[in-house]
Image 1 (tube, rainbow, N blue to C red):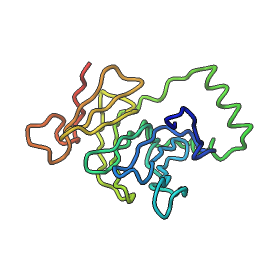
Image 2: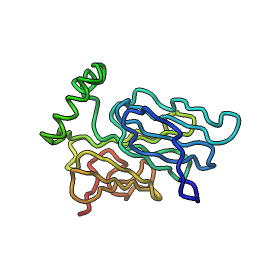
Image 3: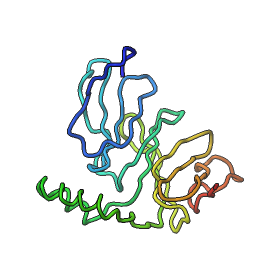
Image 4: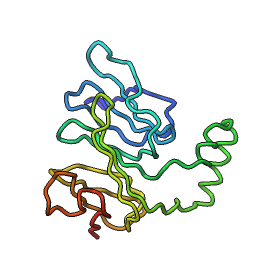
Length: 187
């Protein structure tokens, strides 16, 4: 949105844009595209201004929000792992996908309770910086993640409270065992 209140559409026809974050220098935006399981980058300034490319393709799960970290990496919450049925649905004609979406809204099924919490950090060039997983976690469906100091704070639309865990190498006494055990849940 511009200061005068007007808006400009930069990208369209995305597969459920579900999070946006700016590069530390403001040169590009990163958009989490949940349906496509990817992160795209839209250049705002410089020689590539106005162009869009894929920052990370074929993520191991469905990205649901992202935030910039203090070191320039983008932290991405993966709400759940890939699901074969959902992947198949995305290949079907639009009319079938629309009918499935209407049925889903009417039935309101609960998301599968997957016992793994997973977040990724991706550098501005698309290379992986960190991949943290906590198996058999009491916390479910991470939909937001934010790095603060040596810790990650995670939120969920299906779990009560927030989860906090230490980053690997953030100190021996930090909660969460460097992300290998279940995060501490704060309600």
